[in-house]
Image 1 (cartoon, protein in one colour):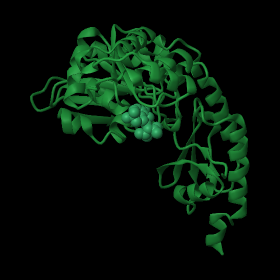
Image 2 (cartoon, helix red, strand yellow):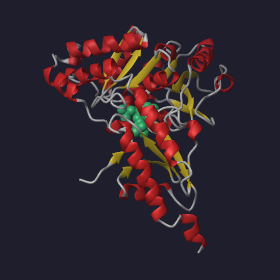
Image 3 (tube, helix red, strand yellow):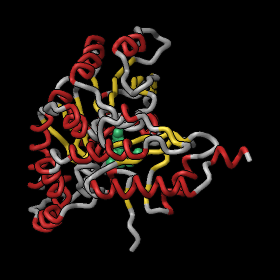
Image 4 (cartoon, helix red, strand yellow):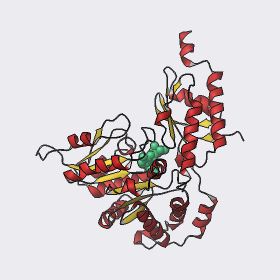
Amino acid sequence: MARIVELRSDTFTQPTESMRKAMAAADVGDDVWDEDPTVHRLQQRAAEMVGKEASLFVPSGTMGNLCALLSHTESGEEVLLEIDSHIFQNEVAGASVVGGLQLRPLDTVDGRMQPEQVRRAIREPDIHEPRTGLLCIENTHNRKGGICLNPAQTAALAEVAHAAGFPVHLDGARVFNAAVALEVNVRQLTGPVDSVMFCLSKGLSAPVGSLLAGTAPFIERARRMRKMLGGGMRQAGVLAAAGLISINEMVDRLAEDHRNAHRLAEGLQGLTGVDIDLALVETNMVFGDCRPPLTAREFSQRCQEVGVLLDLASPYRWRMVTHRGVSADDVEFAIAAVRRALDANTPAPLRVAR
Ligand code: TLP
């Protein structure tokens, strides 16, 4: 079979052999009745790792974020968040549809909202206006390149929200990537916020699932929201068993994905028609911009023909994501293949000039 390097997302990671064994052997119960011992172990361990009182196993990051938003707010409130955040761009407006929430996007260059920018966006009490009910932050920030918020930046944003009397939710789908890249304990990134969602099914390689963590009363509310959304699972311990391996054994190896992403970006620099900013590669993502008229779709097609799969971010922007299923050797293969593919084609701008 021809070689394929899967760079579309770290969601493509396959469970490890040890995960499959643990799943087969898991002790299970009915988790809607809160009686699954393996889910309990996962929730306890997850809460401990991120320094919160309790946590809840949910089927996806999207549901974890939505449970958090619904549990923190009342219908009609406004949620402050970054314009390219996953909650604003990629969650099908669930917060508005289900929660009756108004999402207020704040524009940034690199995904890092500034404390003063957030302060200015907070509403004064006024009968005409929605109340500001929540601030959401994202770490790592996906669409802005997998960039990290450090502990000081996280604390400064949380301080603004808390001073105004509303909570902060962290979309930490890849917060362990941030902790590894910054070389800090993940609690330094989760400590300042009121709730955090993180995913098991991305770089941490579990087949399914995310966790939402916060105070015990908050998690009780979130449990009701999960049920309302249809996310109450029964013998979910078969999934939680894999998740325990994710958080216990798969975190440190994320550094390898980060090294591979850096090498990939370095190797692809200087390609005809494609711009990559190496300085923006902080974790496991590489974003690139095609110079018109070369489109990201056309670039992606050329890459696919040589066995390299990537994700489209916008008409001229694409994303490559490294993960456990991509070795250092795969990265070298991908660099050489993409270079060959672009060289073999007359660069798009020249073709137009002719
Ligand atoms: N991100 C996916 C796609 O939906 C874009 C990916 O391939 O990167 N928060 C962040 C920051 C995410 O990147 C994602 C998934 C989620 C939440 C949602 O997680 P799931 O896919 O489990 O619902």
